[in-house]
Image (cartoon, rainbow, N blue to C red; front, side):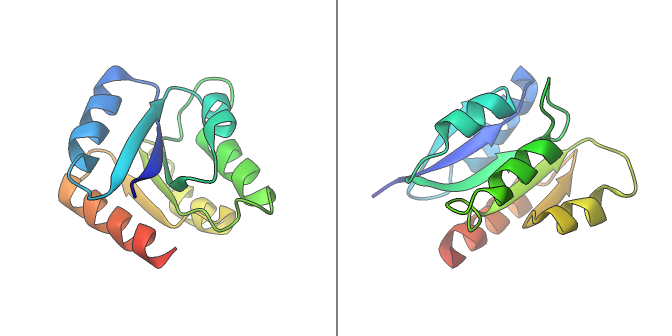
Length: 123
């Protein structure tokens, strides 16, 4: 049974890159949205992982992670962040918020794919 991986990326180029990078992960269906609000509305029982950018319109990726982690029914959800955010405090801030992985852009598709598979199988 395929499970959903929800990708939150607001640029067409970023969406295409993540779709190509994650397309070969077995037994998943990618859902791609442009905003954190859309992601929160779509998170469901069949969602097995969240992959998000940080620089999103209105509600940023940090706020999205906080919202997911504050929901008792979603605290277990693996969260990967792929972002061009250049703030040196970003990695430690993401760890404190409960993100499971962080990849700065540009990212290695093979590394992202491998880490996503690890997170899905561990959850």
